[in-house]
Amino acid sequence: MTEPRTRSGTMTSGQIGGDPDRRLSPFATPFATVGATVVAMLIASGALVAVDGDIPAWVAGAGAAVIGAIAVLVVTGARVTAGTGPGRIGVPTRGSEAHVATSSGTVSAPMSAPDAALVLRTRAIELRAEERSRLLDALSDAVLLVDLHGETRFVNEAAFTRFGAEACVAGTRRAFDQLPNHVRNALLGLAGCAEPERRRFEFDWAGDRAAPVVLQAARTGTGRDALVAVVVRDVRSEREADRMKTEFVSKASHELRTPLSSLRAYAEMLVDGEYQDDAQRDHFMRIIVDGADRLARLVDRMLDISRIESGIARAEVAPTDLAAICSACVDEQQGEAMRRGISLSLARTAAGGTVPADAGLLKQVVLNLVSNALKYTPDGGRVEVEVDFDALAREVVVSVRDNGLGIPPEALPRLFGKFYRVDGHEKVAKGTGLGLNLCRNIVEGMHGGKIGVDSEVGRGSRFWFAIPAEPAARKAA
Amino acid sequence: MHGEADHMDRLNARVLVVDDEAHIVQVVALKLRNAELEVDTALDGAEALQMLRLRPYDLVVTDLQMPEMTGTELAQAMSVDPVLARIPILMLTARGHLLREGEAEARNIAKVVHKPFSPRALLAEVMALLPARDEAARRAA
Image (tube, rainbow over all chains, first blue to last red; front, side, top):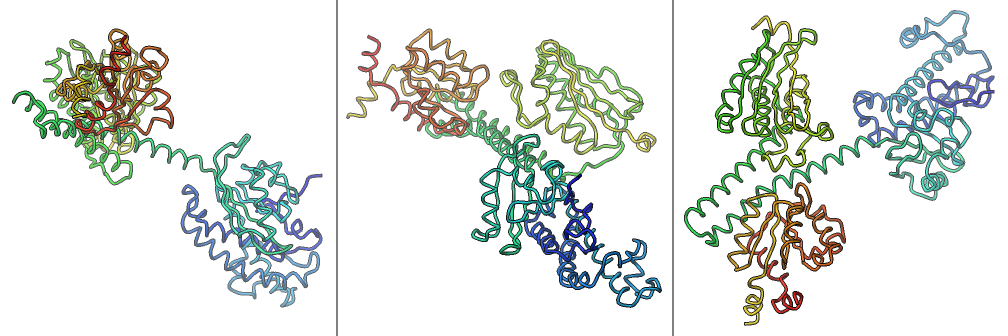
């Protein structure tokens, strides 16, 4: 024999009331009050508007309306069910609800007037119940309702995932017993009315569904009718975001302090007159100016990235000839390449290299990739830029290939992150550690493209990015 | 004056300055040399460790975050070497917060100075850490 599950939506009224012969409205039981409290608590705790965007804001508003409706129905529900014998209520089909709502005259003729009113009221109650179930099931947080012994009275869909379907059995402590000892004790204390009505816990969920979680609980009702509503939220992604934010601030502050240290130290040497001659004094001043420029570049990059990530920066999209951009970048960097004896060339440009894009931003990407290639290629090396049209993927691919240092495989996944520098590369060339991250933001965040790298230590690297080509844009060219 | 005598005692002390930022190494070395100290420089921990094994030093001023071998790795390597363990270390870093509690003491890091720094204040810290000359002579004997 299978045990009755209390899952919302699948629950029948008979299972709740304990008397399968009576067609009780779910709202004729203490459950109704509690259900309303669960929704109320979720709304109060912000759960409805903060579940990772799963729930649109209007649902929260709807939730408030549902509570209002429930409050009325709880009162009327008891009266409705009191005079109802088994099988006496004919439940209208879903399609009839519009008639029911506007005119009681549409209910079938053989029913007496009180019966018809009862049908309408019961149907309205069931609709509300269904709406409330759907609302709770739409939450990504697990909702569990237990009585003062810790026995399950209700779970939502997400609780199935959190506690496991086998544990979500009405009238057992299987779900409750999965909570840590200190939480269980506190919740039983809540039910006993001795403690404050709301509690919040943070702990690591153990077992198969291991994750950091926040558990919020609220008591509803008092004495023997007391129930405890429990909401469990997986906060792994929030924690990860926090960790990344902290790491970013730490790295950013280090990157800012380094040029600032030069500024501070050399300025003081000038103030103290600690230089041997005019040449050394001028050298110190140049270091200060360079340090200030480096700081400015760093701050500019950080702001650019932040503007893209927060969606403030907008691409000014127009038909853009990537081959022309690459050619201009090669020309601009030719001086540096010649100084270093590096052969820099535009190796190939395929036809159809025009894409709808922001020319200024894509030029920034190409310049960044070319200047990186020059930085990490030894004097006398080779850097080639290519523009290809991938007809199958319908995108234009720009590659910058060098025969420089190459990048170790373990560094590749982090290469486009913020402030990441390949071990030992700091010695070869200075950089903000943000250039490739900005490139990724421009290509992927602003143009819906892709950026990547293939590399082999000692043989060189090929950085590439692909921008989708729209037929309209190609025609326009 | 007592302070003056102390300073005279510390003259000719030899300091090793380690930082991967060439500008920082230059300015620290210049400040210390202007104060009549003898200064050698290294650009990472591994290079510093080699130099420490070739010549005796009275103090090491090192950055924390460096390629090849970090400042804490250098301090660790020094702390397990019976000769180098006696040399006090001054850590000059933008990432002092990365040092765990107790780590500085455990690795003979006598002082942490945070970047951005004042060369003047750094020199004062260096002077305070240098052993007086008679003590240095006793150790050498």
